Image 1 (cartoon, rainbow, N blue to C red):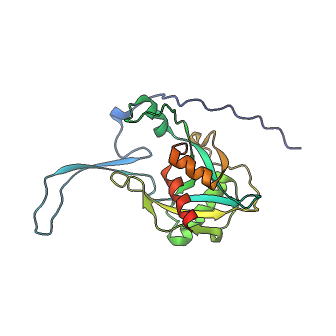
Image 2 (image 1 turned 60 degrees about the horizontal axis):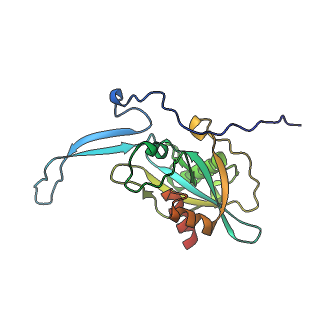
Image 3 (image 1 turned 135 degrees about the vertical axis):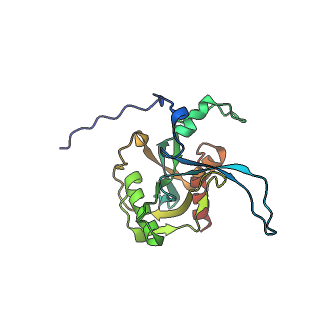
Length: 225
């Protein structure tokens, strides 16, 4: 018999051990910030006044997002999300937003996603990475040829973030789900998956219960197909 694994205690907060922003360089850490002085070049040879531009790059340029879905017992479309620990959303609690909602966003429900590695080239690489992320984050063993691409990639905040996200989906109807392995990092601690009816998830996105733009966009693309 397998040994009983006791449930892990719930995460209730993120504690800041040190904020070393004042002495940190822009080109170190998970996000690299390029700070530049620029000007616009015009077709008549003239130029605009100089202005400052900040651009953020992640360790890998692009990412894939995957909508894991199935048909329920009654034939209805169901979609999987994963609760992820999200420090940037959580630390909004210390700020003054224009429209307060009184919520503390420690975890956010999102579709499966992951960065594209250097070897993930072309559509074949995209499908392979999508299948790997589905196994790691959702616990389903799928093959790259089961992955459906949902059109062109998109930017989330093109004014500052260079990353493009490529949308995909995979049908896991009839497949068994294992415990997601995760990547072992503290940021994946406490993550858990949840199944939604597609209409309920779309409503949750639009009402702010699931405030993740890529999840809503992928769901809309899947539904239009």
